[in-house]
Amino acid sequence: MVDTAVAASNKKATLSPIFIIGMLFFIFGFITWLNSVLIPYLKLACELTTVEAYLVTTAFYISYFVLAIPSAWILKVTGFKKGMSVGLAIIAVGALIFIPAALTRYYGLFLLGLFIQGSGLALLQTASNPYITILGPPESAAKRISIMGVSNKIAGALAPIVLGAITLKSADGFKERLATMAADVKIAQLNELASRVILPYIIIVIVLLVLAVIIYYSSLPEIDTDQEDETTAMNNSGKTSITQFPHLLLGVLTLFFYVGAEVIAGDTIINYGSTQGIALGTAKYFTTATLIFMLVGYGVGILCIPKYLSQEKAMKLSAGLGLILSAVAILTTGYVSVAAIALLGLANSLVWPAIWPMALSGLGRFTKIGSSLLIMGIAGGAIVPLAYGTLAQALNPSYGYIILIPAYFIILYYAVSGHKVGKAKIQKVQL
Image 1 (cartoon, rainbow, N blue to C red):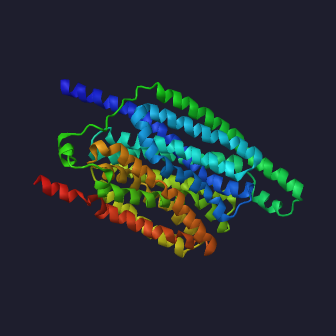
Image 2: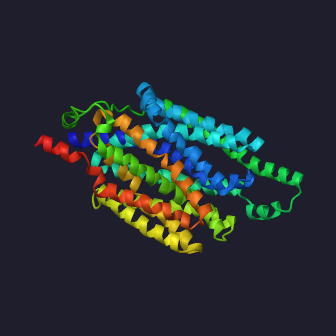
Image 3: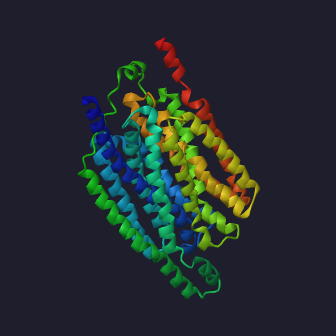
């Protein structure tokens, strides 16, 4: 009876932090997947080329590379909870910059706002991902991250619908009329289009600041990642640097290409659909379709990991499916090709939940810096989609997806053997 009561109490204590972190993952998803609408929207409002439009993802995701290590330093000072509140406040500042950016229709200001939003998210992700990984048994970490993924992708599915309904309303007719407008009328119309983001981003700023206060005063417990159990301490006794964990470094490389693939699947699909002759009024829903498929995959993860499916096997299946769908997207056109990109959401869904516990395994007191390096890997979202945009402009939009093939091969390698590199030596020493 006593054991049952203690177990129930521990479960309740874990569920409350999971709910709070779930709110944060909702924010991650909503802010991040707004980019899928911002790309075609800003391309139109600021009169950009294809490559220039994809600087949206570059500005947003490069901040993860720049801010990841400083985020670890900040968390050492603030702890997880206060660090999360600071991260939310930083995102609010970035969202606020969208207001003068819209009023001036200056693309550089939009990019600055996106960089600052990404910086706040870098701090939040550095705190929340290892937090949810450590908050329970390691073998079910992918399951907990899958639950977070559901919250993240529900928000991501809603974001393009909400912002698209406001910013891309009558966009197809607007594009046709733009070519025949007089110069002064054209400027007035573009200014009106740019102003459409002001109200949504004012609301976003308010929500972020309120949530920052809620997190700051919440009962979210601190987790001391500097403490190691006896086995981990023994394995790490001679370790002086994070570079002595090759399975983590390979995990960073894998995360780099995975995030690039995920961003391509979600953020290019609206613009890609329009290049296939599909109206923007229809194409604006394609990112939501991608994220719905991701939700299906997360559901599989929640039900099957670790009872029926190991984290490693889930990642292998994801990589294999990603390779098949990428080939279909490249070799076909129209709705078939677009559907293959949307289905990449399913292929991508279980990669992120698997990478984190596999890469952080055995890091002990190096967990914070290891998490920071993994967050740096999110910079793949800055580089890989831009490479897609360059290929799409130079060749054609379908062939741009060739960049996905090496990305999924790297994911497959990590699932098969990359996550074991360096660990065998530790086991031999123990024997």
